[in-house]
Length: 328
Image (cartoon, rainbow, N blue to C red; front, side, top):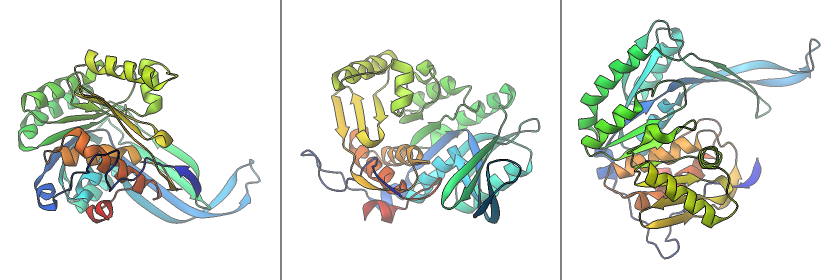
């Protein structure tokens, strides 16, 4: 493991701010609707003892296999593992991977609402692990047909009224082709709307409560910055042009920066043992959504989300954390 700054951990007052406590009972009654691209994460673990005679690559003798929820399914699992109720709206194929994925979802207690398309290949990410390191990742995927996505938009209209927050988890696989329509419907229902964005066209997220790009994603959209003041100007310009309540930029070792109508609010990272950053962004936005569903403001939820991200980077692969871990 390497010693790197993480997203940070905060459970004490920071910069004069008191961290708002979480009420477990209120959290358990909160309902979050997660919408986006689901995938099945497969892990093959094995021993590496020699190099292949066919090519200069290691030979992995697979000894153990593990399936995990990936993509927006991992986001929903993070919501559920924190103690809130999670519903998951997505599109999958009619294949073995979709059956494995749905079985995993049902085991957790997440309520799935899956549209199915016989022509679609359910996204699978296969990671081969040797000597506690990822040696290879193979992706199997195809974009869904728009007809299936349109039917999910209709179902979204029914579901949004029974949830206290909506979280769009965009992995660029085509599952959110109608996200603009869904955001409009969520706004009418007066739900907090959180978006983990993808790509460079953020106009499709117009009207959301908060978007959470990481540093590189933000640079792709607004261009590079050389000073904090320049970042502030670019972020606020983006927020205003898209009619957002807030933009939250996750910046790895630089912590997190929130830009809203009040100005800017920075949460510092703290050094800790980092094992794997996979899925840390999922945990951050899932924690934000869960707490905003309880009535927290984005500023009140941010220190807890920051702490949650700092915890999961100490775990291997797509990970989550419990309510007990978060408040410990």
